[in-house]
Length: 411
Ligand code: C5P
Image 1 (cartoon, rainbow, N blue to C red):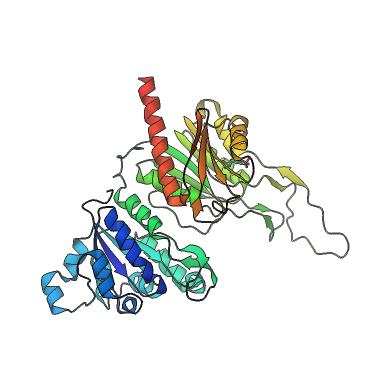
Image 2: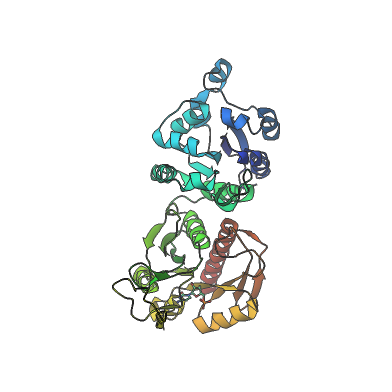
């Protein structure tokens, strides 16, 4: 009952994903939350207030100037009594209105009036999500302090089109709510005062000014770990390769492009207590990236001369007195997962390797779920398939436990 005694104001805006709100309300209530739903007119076209009210176990609010509601609760009181305002699904139109400070209906008026944290779970067609106007609004909302969960990549319910725009699954939205409401105040929490480096995302290794070597890493797992660690009170620096993810709340983010830049940025963070190296660093780079675009001449294609990149994890794990007390690496494998992870543990000098099985269809680079096994000198812990946010929260819990065991052992 992690959300016991918490009031979540759930704003449901228009979109086919509104059908998932019922499942979301059910899960929030299972975690102990009181859910007060506010529906826009557009939302009522997709899910009925009767079903929302029934699952929420109370009244559904929708009219700004309903005399009864305004007398009884009123939009200011609704806004003030919430511990968190969750907008799920958040349509492009809803985010545009909130970003612009417009309040034409109850949902937007509440969002303008609230002082509680606001979490958006966007859901829309991939083209609408990618539209620069939407991206501008999202950036503005983030600047204003709003948080986001998703959107996820997948097939759109209405068109069968695939892309970034699906609303995150209810379980992942609940995990994001827990991360915010369970988040420690500065200087508190299980990782209070712990300095942590997290690397995430791919690296881009230039061949010439327009071409580069890259991989499919989305950075989602590393970003989720940085966010969960910060919510647990850690002082986190996230060194991120080129990814399309916004800075997680409460985290210092250093954006880099190449492995060499990632190594320099990671070393600059030392000393640190914990290093979590979740980046998919390119193994090789061009020996001599060309200063001008390589011409497509007739005849033989050009030969690429590659050289090995530095191993950031191994460098940090063998950094003498500056080695963090706990160094954690990742390993994406399709075969002999555990044996390969064990070998990596030794080869890189890491304390733990979080191995993810990329053959099972989950944990595939860029996806939202992960199936991981935590391999240490003491054994292997296998975790069930779950959202990357859930994996992050669990890993942060294990880190806190390990640090506290070490402290007890040292006393
Ligand atoms: O050897 P492999 O790439 O499978 O190892 C994966 C682990 O090593 C990850 O934790 C990754 O972040 C780290 N790594 C690194 N620098 C490299 C290659 C891998 O930090 N050049």
